Image (cartoon, rainbow, N blue to C red; front, side):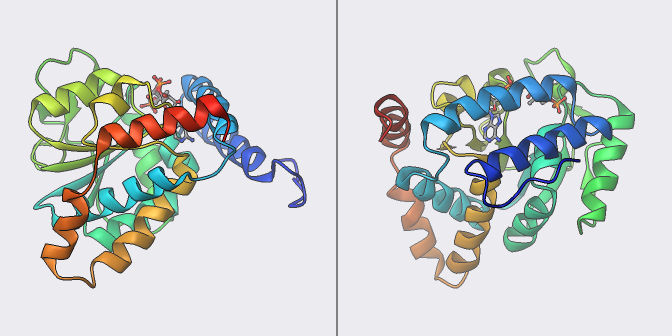
Length: 245
Ligand code: PTJ
Protein backbone atom coordinates (compact mmCIF):
# COMPACT_ATOMS: atom_id res chain seq x y z
CA UNK A 1 0.00 0.00 0.00
CA UNK A 2 1.42 3.37 -1.06
CA UNK A 3 1.65 6.07 1.61
CA UNK A 4 -0.36 9.11 0.52
CA UNK A 5 0.63 12.40 2.17
CA UNK A 6 -2.40 14.11 3.72
CA UNK A 7 -1.29 17.35 2.05
CA UNK A 8 -1.95 15.84 -1.39
CA UNK A 9 -4.74 17.91 -3.04
CA UNK A 10 -6.66 14.74 -3.95
CA UNK A 11 -5.89 12.84 -0.72
CA UNK A 12 -9.48 11.60 -0.12
CA UNK A 13 -9.89 10.42 -3.67
CA UNK A 14 -6.58 8.52 -3.68
CA UNK A 15 -7.36 6.94 -0.31
CA UNK A 16 -10.71 5.81 -1.69
CA UNK A 17 -8.99 4.16 -4.66
CA UNK A 18 -6.69 2.29 -2.33
CA UNK A 19 -9.63 1.02 -0.28
CA UNK A 20 -11.25 -0.34 -3.43
CA UNK A 21 -7.98 -1.91 -4.63
CA UNK A 22 -7.59 -3.49 -1.22
CA UNK A 23 -11.17 -4.75 -1.40
CA UNK A 24 -10.43 -6.49 -4.70
CA UNK A 25 -7.24 -8.03 -3.30
CA UNK A 26 -9.14 -9.45 -0.34
CA UNK A 27 -12.02 -10.89 -2.40
CA UNK A 28 -14.52 -8.35 -1.02
CA UNK A 29 -14.96 -6.08 -4.04
CA UNK A 30 -15.56 -7.45 -7.54
CA UNK A 31 -13.33 -6.42 -10.44
CA UNK A 32 -16.36 -4.64 -11.90
CA UNK A 33 -16.34 -2.63 -8.69
CA UNK A 34 -13.19 -0.90 -9.95
CA UNK A 35 -15.06 0.28 -13.03
CA UNK A 36 -18.03 1.41 -10.93
CA UNK A 37 -15.63 3.42 -8.74
CA UNK A 38 -14.18 5.11 -11.85
CA UNK A 39 -17.64 6.11 -13.03
CA UNK A 40 -18.42 7.54 -9.61
CA UNK A 41 -15.13 9.45 -9.41
CA UNK A 42 -15.83 11.27 -12.66
CA UNK A 43 -19.09 12.66 -11.25
CA UNK A 44 -17.48 13.45 -7.90
CA UNK A 45 -14.75 15.43 -9.67
CA UNK A 46 -17.44 17.51 -11.39
CA UNK A 47 -19.20 18.06 -8.05
CA UNK A 48 -15.94 19.43 -6.62
CA UNK A 49 -15.59 16.35 -4.36
CA UNK A 50 -17.94 17.97 -1.83
CA UNK A 51 -21.41 17.46 -0.43
CA UNK A 52 -23.71 19.96 -2.10
CA UNK A 53 -26.52 21.41 0.11
CA UNK A 54 -29.30 19.41 -1.63
CA UNK A 55 -27.36 16.17 -0.99
CA UNK A 56 -26.98 17.02 2.68
CA UNK A 57 -30.71 17.69 2.87
CA UNK A 58 -31.41 14.34 1.18
CA UNK A 59 -29.10 12.60 3.69
CA UNK A 60 -31.17 14.15 6.49
CA UNK A 61 -34.42 12.99 4.91
CA UNK A 62 -32.99 9.49 4.44
CA UNK A 63 -31.99 9.42 8.12
CA UNK A 64 -35.55 10.46 9.04
CA UNK A 65 -36.98 7.65 6.87
CA UNK A 66 -34.75 5.07 8.60
CA UNK A 67 -35.75 6.36 12.05
CA UNK A 68 -39.49 6.16 11.33
CA UNK A 69 -39.34 2.78 9.54
CA UNK A 70 -40.83 -0.40 11.01
CA UNK A 71 -38.07 -2.52 9.49
CA UNK A 72 -35.15 -0.62 7.96
CA UNK A 73 -32.39 -2.54 6.16
CA UNK A 74 -29.05 -1.32 4.76
CA UNK A 75 -28.01 -3.27 1.66
CA UNK A 76 -24.25 -3.75 1.30
CA UNK A 77 -22.30 -4.75 -1.83
CA UNK A 78 -18.57 -5.19 -2.43
CA UNK A 79 -17.87 -1.49 -3.02
CA UNK A 80 -19.82 -0.37 0.04
CA UNK A 81 -18.04 -2.92 2.25
CA UNK A 82 -14.60 -1.80 1.05
CA UNK A 83 -15.28 1.94 1.29
CA UNK A 84 -17.36 2.45 4.46
CA UNK A 85 -17.42 -0.69 6.67
CA UNK A 86 -17.35 0.96 10.09
CA UNK A 87 -19.50 3.89 8.89
CA UNK A 88 -22.27 1.47 7.78
CA UNK A 89 -22.15 -0.25 11.18
CA UNK A 90 -22.46 3.14 12.90
CA UNK A 91 -25.43 4.11 10.71
CA UNK A 92 -27.12 0.77 11.50
CA UNK A 93 -26.62 1.41 15.21
CA UNK A 94 -27.87 5.00 15.06
CA UNK A 95 -31.08 3.97 13.25
CA UNK A 96 -31.55 0.38 14.58
CA UNK A 97 -31.38 -0.86 11.00
CA UNK A 98 -30.26 -4.33 9.92
CA UNK A 99 -27.42 -4.95 7.48
CA UNK A 100 -27.85 -7.37 4.56
CA UNK A 101 -25.19 -8.30 2.01
CA UNK A 102 -26.64 -8.37 -1.50
CA UNK A 103 -24.37 -8.89 -4.48
CA UNK A 104 -24.58 -8.62 -8.23
CA UNK A 105 -21.61 -10.96 -8.66
CA UNK A 106 -22.86 -13.25 -5.92
CA UNK A 107 -20.87 -16.15 -4.47
CA UNK A 108 -21.24 -17.59 -0.97
CA UNK A 109 -17.50 -17.05 -0.51
CA UNK A 110 -17.77 -13.31 -1.19
CA UNK A 111 -20.77 -13.00 1.12
CA UNK A 112 -18.78 -14.74 3.88
CA UNK A 113 -15.78 -12.47 3.33
CA UNK A 114 -17.88 -9.32 3.37
CA UNK A 115 -19.74 -10.49 6.51
CA UNK A 116 -16.44 -11.22 8.27
CA UNK A 117 -15.07 -7.83 7.19
CA UNK A 118 -18.17 -6.06 8.60
CA UNK A 119 -17.96 -8.05 11.85
CA UNK A 120 -14.32 -6.97 12.17
CA UNK A 121 -15.67 -3.43 11.96
CA UNK A 122 -18.17 -3.95 14.76
CA UNK A 123 -21.29 -5.50 13.18
CA UNK A 124 -23.20 -8.21 15.09
CA UNK A 125 -25.72 -9.83 12.80
CA UNK A 126 -25.34 -9.76 9.05
CA UNK A 127 -28.09 -11.02 6.78
CA UNK A 128 -27.81 -12.23 3.19
CA UNK A 129 -26.64 -15.83 3.30
CA UNK A 130 -30.04 -17.44 3.87
CA UNK A 131 -31.43 -16.01 0.61
CA UNK A 132 -34.76 -17.81 1.02
CA UNK A 133 -36.81 -15.25 -0.90
CA UNK A 134 -36.67 -13.61 -4.33
CA UNK A 135 -37.43 -10.06 -5.44
CA UNK A 136 -40.14 -10.50 -8.10
CA UNK A 137 -39.27 -9.47 -11.66
CA UNK A 138 -35.48 -9.88 -11.41
CA UNK A 139 -33.67 -12.79 -12.99
CA UNK A 140 -30.13 -12.15 -11.74
CA UNK A 141 -28.36 -12.89 -8.46
CA UNK A 142 -29.45 -9.64 -6.84
CA UNK A 143 -32.97 -11.06 -6.62
CA UNK A 144 -31.79 -13.35 -3.79
CA UNK A 145 -32.72 -11.84 -0.43
CA UNK A 146 -33.47 -12.97 3.11
CA UNK A 147 -37.18 -13.41 3.91
CA UNK A 148 -36.72 -11.69 7.25
CA UNK A 149 -34.35 -9.07 5.77
CA UNK A 150 -34.73 -7.00 2.59
CA UNK A 151 -37.83 -8.96 1.52
CA UNK A 152 -39.69 -7.89 4.66
CA UNK A 153 -38.21 -4.37 4.96
CA UNK A 154 -40.33 -1.25 4.49
CA UNK A 155 -37.33 1.09 4.04
CA UNK A 156 -34.13 -0.01 2.27
CA UNK A 157 -30.86 1.85 1.71
CA UNK A 158 -29.45 0.74 -1.65
CA UNK A 159 -26.11 2.42 -2.35
CA UNK A 160 -24.18 2.10 -5.64
CA UNK A 161 -26.75 -0.04 -7.39
CA UNK A 162 -27.56 -0.84 -10.94
CA UNK A 163 -31.05 0.37 -11.82
CA UNK A 164 -33.12 -2.76 -12.20
CA UNK A 165 -33.10 -3.91 -8.57
CA UNK A 166 -33.92 -0.36 -7.54
CA UNK A 167 -36.94 -0.48 -9.87
CA UNK A 168 -37.98 -3.95 -8.64
CA UNK A 169 -37.81 -2.86 -4.98
CA UNK A 170 -39.89 0.20 -5.82
CA UNK A 171 -42.44 -2.12 -7.49
CA UNK A 172 -42.67 -4.00 -4.17
CA UNK A 173 -43.75 -0.72 -2.58
CA UNK A 174 -40.62 -0.19 -0.51
CA UNK A 175 -39.24 3.23 0.37
CA UNK A 176 -35.88 3.34 -1.33
CA UNK A 177 -32.97 5.46 -0.23
CA UNK A 178 -30.29 5.56 -2.93
CA UNK A 179 -26.72 6.89 -2.72
CA UNK A 180 -25.31 7.42 -6.20
CA UNK A 181 -23.04 10.11 -7.64
CA UNK A 182 -24.88 10.02 -10.97
CA UNK A 183 -28.19 11.94 -10.78
CA UNK A 184 -29.20 10.49 -14.16
CA UNK A 185 -28.76 6.84 -13.13
CA UNK A 186 -31.90 4.71 -13.11
CA UNK A 187 -31.51 3.99 -9.39
CA UNK A 188 -31.31 7.69 -8.52
CA UNK A 189 -34.31 8.40 -10.73
CA UNK A 190 -36.35 5.60 -9.13
CA UNK A 191 -35.42 6.44 -5.52
CA UNK A 192 -37.85 7.84 -2.98
CA UNK A 193 -34.83 9.71 -1.61
CA UNK A 194 -31.87 10.10 -4.03
CA UNK A 195 -28.66 11.20 -2.29
CA UNK A 196 -26.29 12.47 -4.99
CA UNK A 197 -23.02 12.26 -3.12
CA UNK A 198 -19.99 10.08 -2.56
CA UNK A 199 -20.81 7.26 -0.17
CA UNK A 200 -17.73 8.11 1.89
CA UNK A 201 -19.38 11.44 2.76
CA UNK A 202 -23.07 10.47 2.58
CA UNK A 203 -23.09 7.65 5.16
CA UNK A 204 -21.38 9.66 7.97
CA UNK A 205 -23.72 12.58 7.14
CA UNK A 206 -26.76 10.30 7.52
CA UNK A 207 -25.48 9.07 10.90
CA UNK A 208 -24.91 12.62 12.12
CA UNK A 209 -28.45 13.59 11.08
CA UNK A 210 -29.95 10.43 12.61
CA UNK A 211 -28.30 11.14 15.99
CA UNK A 212 -29.75 14.63 15.97
CA UNK A 213 -33.21 13.73 14.62
CA UNK A 214 -33.78 10.89 17.07
CA UNK A 215 -33.91 13.49 19.87
CA UNK A 216 -36.97 15.13 18.23
CA UNK A 217 -40.67 14.22 18.51
CA UNK A 218 -41.91 11.90 15.74
CA UNK A 219 -44.04 14.64 14.10
CA UNK A 220 -40.96 16.79 13.61
CA UNK A 221 -39.07 13.91 12.01
CA UNK A 222 -42.08 13.26 9.76
CA UNK A 223 -42.15 16.91 8.71
CA UNK A 224 -38.52 16.62 7.50
CA UNK A 225 -39.72 13.82 5.19
CA UNK A 226 -42.86 15.69 4.07
CA UNK A 227 -40.90 18.81 3.06
CA UNK A 228 -38.58 16.88 0.70
CA UNK A 229 -38.84 17.39 -3.07
CA UNK A 230 -36.93 14.59 -4.85
CA UNK A 231 -37.21 16.19 -8.31
CA UNK A 232 -35.67 19.38 -6.98
CA UNK A 233 -32.81 17.43 -5.36
CA UNK A 234 -32.04 15.62 -8.63
CA UNK A 235 -32.25 18.83 -10.67
CA UNK A 236 -29.97 20.71 -8.31
CA UNK A 237 -27.31 17.95 -8.46
CA UNK A 238 -27.48 17.87 -12.26
CA UNK A 239 -27.16 21.65 -12.36
CA UNK A 240 -24.12 21.55 -10.03
CA UNK A 241 -22.44 18.94 -12.24
CA UNK A 242 -23.21 20.74 -15.52
CA UNK A 243 -22.25 24.20 -14.32
CA UNK A 244 -19.30 23.15 -12.16
CA UNK A 245 -20.57 25.43 -9.36
O1 PTJ B 1 -20.29 -6.11 -5.25
P1 PTJ B 1 -21.24 -6.45 -6.36
O2 PTJ B 1 -20.96 -7.82 -6.95
O3 PTJ B 1 -22.70 -6.37 -5.92
O4 PTJ B 1 -21.07 -5.38 -7.56
C1 PTJ B 1 -21.31 -4.04 -7.31
C2 PTJ B 1 -21.10 -3.08 -8.52
C3 PTJ B 1 -20.84 -1.68 -7.96
C4 PTJ B 1 -19.90 -3.53 -9.34
C5 PTJ B 1 -22.38 -3.07 -9.37
O5 PTJ B 1 -23.43 -2.65 -8.56
C6 PTJ B 1 -22.27 -2.18 -10.59
O6 PTJ B 1 -21.81 -2.59 -11.65
O7 PTJ B 1 -22.71 -0.94 -10.42
P2 PTJ B 1 -22.80 0.14 -11.62
O8 PTJ B 1 -23.90 -0.27 -12.56
O9 PTJ B 1 -21.45 0.44 -12.17
O10 PTJ B 1 -23.33 1.40 -10.84
C7 PTJ B 1 -22.64 1.96 -9.79
C8 PTJ B 1 -23.18 3.40 -9.60
O11 PTJ B 1 -22.60 3.87 -8.38
C9 PTJ B 1 -22.78 4.37 -10.71
O12 PTJ B 1 -23.89 5.18 -11.05
C10 PTJ B 1 -21.66 5.23 -10.07
O13 PTJ B 1 -21.71 6.57 -10.52
C11 PTJ B 1 -22.01 5.15 -8.61
N1 PTJ B 1 -20.83 5.22 -7.72
C12 PTJ B 1 -19.63 4.64 -7.87
N2 PTJ B 1 -18.80 4.91 -6.84
C13 PTJ B 1 -19.52 5.67 -5.98
C14 PTJ B 1 -20.82 5.89 -6.54
N3 PTJ B 1 -21.76 6.59 -5.90
C15 PTJ B 1 -21.45 7.11 -4.68
N4 PTJ B 1 -20.23 6.95 -4.10
C16 PTJ B 1 -19.24 6.24 -4.70
N5 PTJ B 1 -18.04 6.11 -4.12
